Image (cartoon, rainbow, N blue to C red; front, top):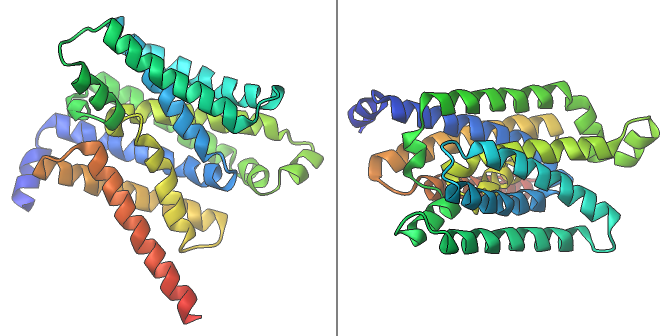
Length: 280
């Protein structure tokens, strides 16, 4: 099996896929802890539906690089979700439901009405659950992913202390002169970037798992924000790498295999956490 893995790693497209997969999982886990603690997990799910609808439009327009359209529209969707949730009479979760369901339905409708291939069901399934397109990434796409990932990581590290204070006590942060609304908007924009990057990896319906599972698993083991964040990054990267290698070796869907690895890790951490509590 090791010889077979070494043989596959000799191909550039496999190395590109592993690089992108690790970077996406790393960025997702960094933001996942803050999103879970702030109870903003639903934003990732809603934005993934927005990204799907935009991806459908990009497919119909036959854009050579759909990121040109998907990235700005998903970021705009993040801004609208936060703004609409705070300025309308509808609750934030209701606004999110309207936007996400509408985007999902319109995306599927557009792909059917303006079909660009004979295999519509296959195209929809690939967009929703990920596809082998992660194994056909070009060098330019990898560089773009690396650049955006560096931006996400740098912003998180630079704003770490402020994000920490806003996450745990937004009222205190506001009293000390900080503006939680701005940091909430920043988090939403960053998660929009991560979701756009992860679309080709696990699909629009499964990308939320990369954000949520590592954070929840780490919270079963550690109690401090820093420890949970570091653990979440490690678990996420290990699961993504293991899932992609397993997918390449045995031919299973990339996205589903990665999410399955995250689920197994989450269950293991739950068992370890339960044993710890039982021992006490």
